[in-house]
Amino acid sequence: MIKVLFSARPAAWDEYEAPLRRAFDAAGLDCDLSRDHAPQDTRYIVFAPNGPVKDFTPYVNTRLVMGLWAGVETVVGNTTLTQPLARMVDDGLTRGMIEYVVGHVMRHHLGMDAHLAGQDGVWRDTVYPPLAKDRPITVLGLGALGAACGQALAALGFPVTGWSRSQKQIDGLTCLSGDDGLTTALSGAQGVVLLLPQTPATDSILNARSLALLEPGAFIVNPGRGPLIDDAALLAALGSGQVGAATLDVFRKEPLAADDPYWSHPRVTVTPHIASTTRPDTAAQVIAENIRRGEAGLPFLHLVDRKAGY
Image 1 (cartoon, one colour):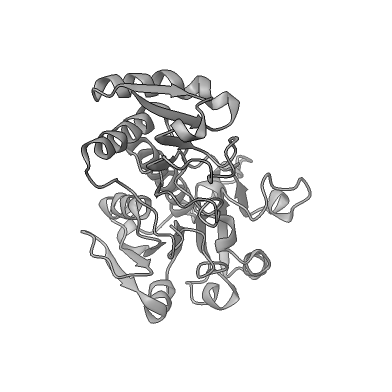
Image 2 (cartoon, rainbow, N blue to C red):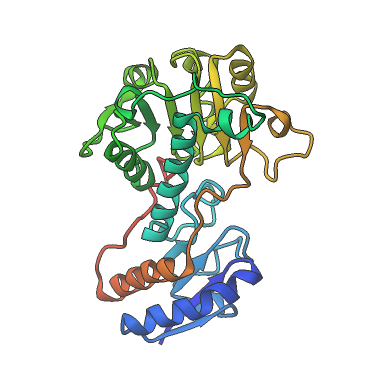
């Protein structure tokens, strides 16, 4: 029997136990799922950083640690974690992110806030958007989520430029990489979507210099990671009008402090890190597939590159 340890916050057990058991059965896996397996008996760990396992040293027979989250920045630097680490990539997470990004991009593109806030009897017929084809959008980060969101926006008619650390080729997108590529990707962009991982190289990638490259009045949507943005630079750009609006789902410190200026800024929308979350039913299928592959001697899916940090 394959012993699978579930290490996440206690409430997550109630959400994941039944979907995981169903997924194991569907995959023909004889798994013993528990929160209490002895380390030496544990073959696989289903893991979230808010769970009880912090020291992986005793898990000498563990073949794979499978994260429940897309981001791994809080665990990838754990020096006791010598086992292979897989991050969560699943259809539910991707679909949720597409819906969030498309919804907020369309909100800013259409200028909906001007009409929603202006229900005061004034006929604002001068507030209307260009066509999507005339609104260039840049997506920073072309992993599974960034690529999917970029293609969804391109399908609506937006010209989408994507940027990533390494060169990619994705249907429907203009793909750039490197420092020069970043400058080109941001120059004249009217909207920017941030879906990069959090690494030392991406910290404050949106700063005073890069924000100045945008078309004046551009909007920012950040469902990626809070440290991607230099907060002081963004607030200054909002104050000058260089940035017209921002939807922010992630922050350097969460929950966002009650007195943080983002809360009260008239052109900032704060959402509480809910852009997309892992769905137990779809995530369980990914976990079961990786266990199946491990037992069959096949390569694992979605392994983290420790040197790259994601």
